Image 1 (cartoon, rainbow, N blue to C red):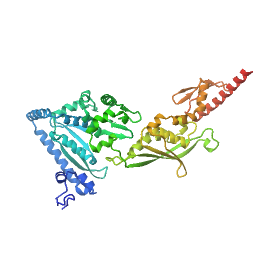
Image 2 (image 1 turned 180 degrees about the vertical axis):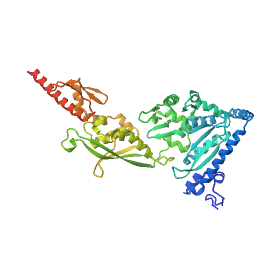
Image 3 (image 1 turned 30 degrees about the vertical axis):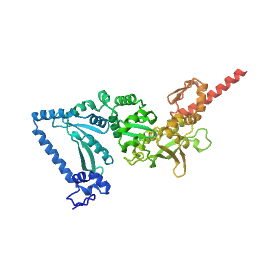
Image 4 (image 1 turned 90 degrees about the vertical axis):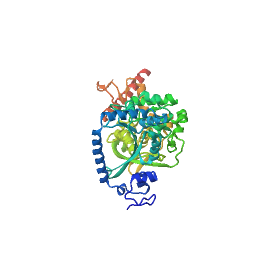
Length: 487
């Protein structure tokens, strides 16, 4: 017989009933604490058979319910819902803005209930919600199952309440046919406790900004949430173009917000508000590979010709280790950002033609600066970028300014501006040369051929060479005019 490692008692099986009532822990927490594989504690076949049995019993019981029973239960729900305290309502509001969901059962028209999922690391937070909603008859359940994709036994701990008429009304305020919505009625009732619960569910600290992850809401609803927070707390929340789906605000504009919301935030989440300084810092590095071509204009050497490289890029992010996730930043997030904004732009392309800032000199040093300019907006903890032009032979390391300093200082723009100075001077001297977006074009008639010479650069090698010929022709014409004037 197995022995419980917590109390030393012999049991027929280690199960949730014993662990929960004797030690206030779930099987997942027990397995993590004592480094035990979940498969050693449970037989997956037992849970598969049990789930099938529950499904059959539920279907049989559903058929036996009558309209009289429905009406009687509905009256009980209405009486119970009228006794909800304001704190209970606020916890429900904040949870539904965050990680909570409403489910409508199949048995009765109004059999809607609230379900909240949280990971094992947030079990204390789940238990806090259990205590806050105790009068609503919640229960904490651990669903144990074998996942073929994970090839192991996993568990999901969630809290669900008894069905209630009140939840049926909330469903009409939080959902439409497309999914979750934000209603003006809910925002008018949301107070500091509700915002604190929403923060604990979906809030995060990103550098010197507080962010709410609101990807489950549409653009219009996110605008409602931004307007609500800015008006209620005199803040400056916004949704960045580079990271759609999250609304964020710098901590220096959150004085009113912090003063009112902080008292309701549990100690384990105070770090999200910047109060608890996380001193355990770490640097994570993700490596990427890019195949691309480039050339160096006005360079006396082989690199003047177009040629290719097998670039290797190291992206380093430094920051505190999140106590809940155990990460500084998810490697998957770094990969997603790099793939979208760097790899898809450069890979198997000629860098000079696809990056305006690098059209003249696509050196490794300027490429690293350009990458920093893009990535520092998306990775506030960006520490350095190391770009290898030849793996294990030659590389450059760039450590740029922070995101805030980058916005205030213009050194990088001036650096790229220097590379464009000759071309920009040409545009100023000859108004017939124009700029439209990233493409330069001209309809100047060539004096040599008598044809219209057009520039669409950076569009291709031919166009670029044509632009150089035209530039030389314009210079000669300008010289001839100057000589004629002097005569």
